[in-house]
Amino acid sequence: QSVLTQPPSVSAAPGQKVTISCSGSSSNIGKNSVSWYQQLPGAAPKLLIYDNDKRPSGIPDRFSGAKSGTSATLGITGLQTGDEADYYCATWDSSLPIEVIFGGGTKLTVL
Amino acid sequence: EVQLVESGGGLVQPGGSLRLSCAASGFTFTNYWMSWVRQAPGKGLEWVANIKGDGSARYYVDSVKGRFTISRDNAENSLCLQMNSLRAEDTAAYYCARGINRYYDLWGRGTLVTVSS
Image (cartoon, rainbow over all chains, first blue to last red; front, side):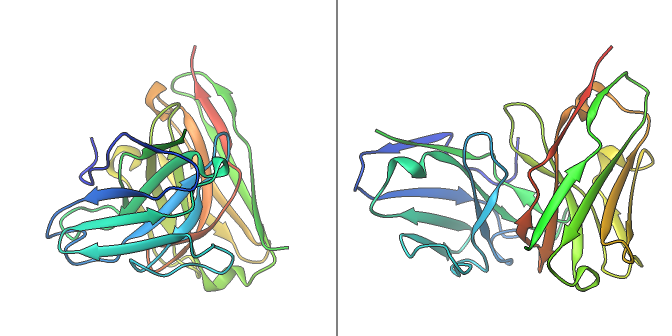
């Protein structure tokens, strides 16, 4: 059970928008930056968002990140079937002797 | 090409040892912290260990302390994870990842470790 809470699954139709939440606390998200990763079936994770809201080169602007207080959100617009994947949030916790903590992951289904 | 390629996974009995390697290419290896992140079958991601660019600092998750050792050879642009006293709960895909300010911008494809009798 991760200290970062994500919904196990979300779904939406192609072309629609979806948001994935990541809830933490004052010792992790409340004071540290959040990153988001996409893991396509059978593949390695891929960085989507870093420093709460920045996109690496090559990541389309359909993907966005935001942070407010002790929660963070990943937004995906113009959903495509190729977006079906597991999505993980990550940060670090000042009270834990762990480099990085990951959320439990959210399975996105594009109906 | 900028990439990380892991190797060394396989089937090992409980209590056994395995050495994972990660070959880095296309970037200045010494400039980066490097990490191992694992994923048990059907489960989420778990950070395992990391090492500073010059090898002067290393950190581990509590569950592997005293059993796993992370190391790097900057002359060969390689990262290793020596895993001893393996347990069933160490069964996972192990990913090599490049770290920047506690996020990972480059990942390998992973290597599967199965601990079973």
